[in-house]
Image 1 (tube, rainbow, N blue to C red):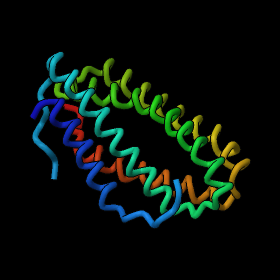
Image 2 (cartoon, rainbow, N blue to C red):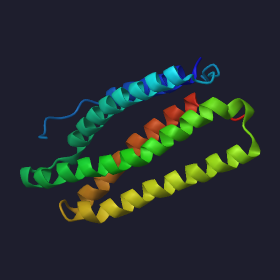
Image 3 (cartoon, helix red, strand yellow):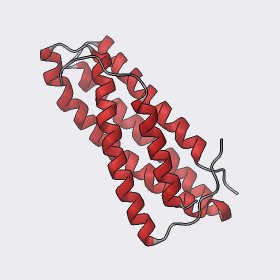
Length: 176
């Protein structure tokens, strides 16, 4: 299986999991075969597939958030623009993760110690960046919704991330 097919399959699984996670209430607003290295054409196709799948995941993610937040009209008016800003900031960080996964899938069978060290450093940097974004947005959300609703939002956000991370971990092979 190619790197392109593995990453596309991972994104499809994630979308499927999010789609089956429950219908929103009305409110506004086993290990896979090892992949081969991707060619330049496959890499371009893969990035297009990732973008399309990411857009579909974001739509479903917003629907799930909508279903649990129970926002009144005033809260929704302030929450949703901030939510979109937050998701854009997280997407920037997640772009780094996608690039790291693609690089890893291209090299994992013959991963050198130096490459592994560099990838681990990048992974930890990505995790710090995710935490930094969340740390920036918790107080900002706290200005437009109650602390309990901020906690609920980040619980849902973390649960959705956990589902995605579990599926990615299942599909990404161990280093050789």
